[in-house]
Length: 367
Image (tube, rainbow, N blue to C red; front, side):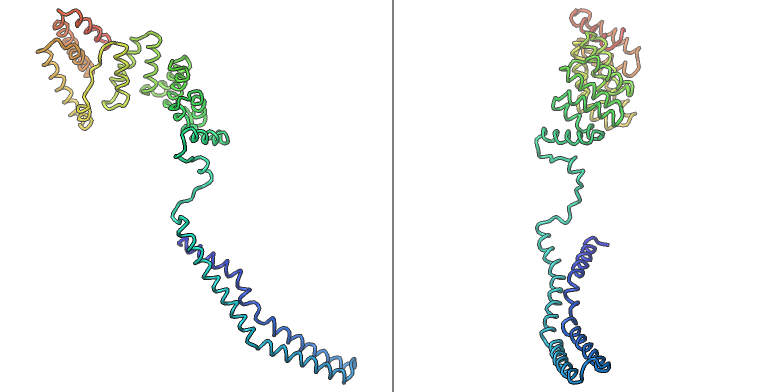
């Protein structure tokens, strides 16, 4: 049943309950009830005369007086003023019954919002106005969480905002609460480690490293945790370990991974060798291919690169790219052969030979 029809019935019932007595309940009170009283008095006089309690002359006088009052009451009861008054009350009741709902709709429709959904009080407290400054929104969420500390979803929403605002100490506490009420997973542990490192001005402390190790234990491929573990190795002076961690990440990463460029830059920083990268057009084309077509495309690109390097062997980056490609394809024999060709091609240039050998070390390949 339509909601508006239910509301209309409720309104009609309320108006009838209030106005029905006014419109129809007083029709016989003025004339009928008074005439009945006088008739009872006449009957009582007759009983008194029969019992000898009143003299006949007094009874006659009383009858005349009561008869006069009875006639007057009858005239008043049958008169038009009563009927007019009754019609007026009924008209007022009908006007109220129809007019009040019409007036309510006339006021509500232009000012109200009949199609808007409900907005429970709990949502008003949790959902702040998005037009407010970010600091005010955070303060509102924090106030809500003070009153509802077990709201795991609230802590999960608040924590990354605090990290972006650089409020790392508060973010650490929020992430501890998120793990407490939502349970741990690799992402939450990695986020907690990031916040701890942020609070230490970017230094991956022992506490932060512990969180990253917990994250990797839950998911060995968690990118944030692996990146920071590589960063911890770099900060400890273990650049080879950092390069090894980041190189594995690149080997496993899909071509369109959003963090690929960050890992490549970090790897270049610790190795001093520019990592070969695919062009955006190549990555897009590879993503649209089937697995078989993608493998065929890769082999074609590798063969083309090998052919070019045989014609121009001075390109150290090209040789490193070719060796790495063979390693990714699992063909270590071709990788060794390509490395031997590369060393022969740059044997007369000590600087390029050193660059080649350093690059091979970063690939974890001894040749």
